[in-house]
Image (cartoon, rainbow, N blue to C red; front, side):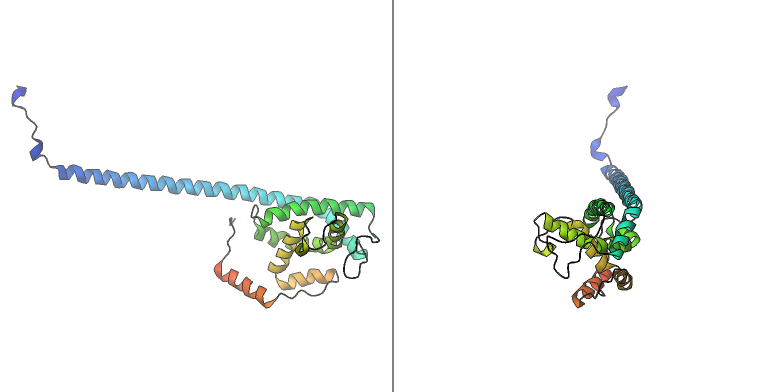
Length: 222
């Protein structure tokens, strides 16, 4: 019975098989692209969640530092850390008591860590600046003489451009806030500490305008 059964491949329509295979390949490619898109979305959501947690940690640290920050800013307004007229010298008269000096050390260490993380995009520096920038600036204005003398005590230059390293990220992020916060807000903080009005250079104004037109290059956008 099966002797008369024959498969004639020469008359088989392979075009239909080829078309069906193409359709299946298109479907599989679509499924693969959808899977990649979902994976990328999940990774992005995970990264944003992690960065938001770090940002909340930094804000929590600032909340905990408020009493110490108030202590050193009030101490500075009562009398600055030193009475050096222009250039800071290694041997000087200190006008802060032991509690104020302890608070200065604690605040400077923690703001150094936060400044490092913000400058290297481990936390959103713009989000952190928008929330805590004014307090960060006022803290730096109060701590600057103390930081300069600490560098001299460690046999470092007092200025970063001359090779100072101690509390470098604290100062650098304060400068970042000073250059990127609204100029009216910056000068309001400077007036509170009897500092001269901050006037950004024309070059800096052009850089800020160019950055606004180009858009932010931060890693995260919570």
